[in-house]
Amino acid sequence: MGRVTGPPAQDRDPGLQPERTRLAWRRTTLSSTVAAVLAAKAALHGGVQVEGVVICALCCALWLSFLAVAHHRIRTLAAGGIPPALTPRHAGMAVLCTVAVAVCAAVLVY
Amino acid sequence: MIDFARNVRLWFEPQHISEEGATPDYRFSLANERTFLAWLRTALALIGGGFAVDQFLPDLRWGVRVGLALALLAAGVLCSLRAVNHWVRCERAMRRGEDLPVSRFPALLSIAVAIVAVAMVVVVLAGWEG
Image (cartoon, rainbow over the protein chains, first blue to last red):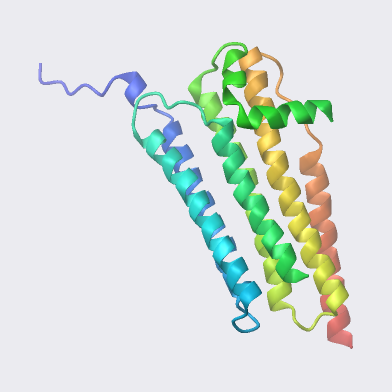
């Protein structure tokens, strides 16, 4: 009577694993934002040229798709209950975006 | 190499993973995911370092600058590919109840970062003297 009971155990993990994972995704989107800003700066460094603008747009698109993957995962983790494991397709997409930014960088540097 | 090809197939066909073994405690999967993300951040930091070397060290000779930048970018690419590969291997090992895979990659990466750092010190000192 009158005792406040916590939510069921499976609704809230005492170790806050889903929250920690969600924040890890946030940190990673922050890192990818830094990389994207550096990419944009490098692409538009020597004045506005066709090549630079194309690479800048490509990096922005890659950053947006990384953001989409992260956002999807964050929403899944925030939904509550036992979250499903990350799918290899999402992991592969996130890595693909990272690698593609590196390839853009290599083209710019060269 | 064949193992690697099979892992690459697994990245894009998740149903093959969930057919194997038993689903582990979701907390282990989430911990594995966070490790994957930490490696991905390391890769992004290396790529950012590549951009930074190219942008903020304009006084370096062209060869040294491009070499250093490309080395950092290559390390970033390797790191991210290894991140997803290691994640898949850990996930599968957990499903099968096997030991987690061991890897010499962290040691190799730290040695590579140490070499780049020493190279930077030498470059800065050489620039200072000259």
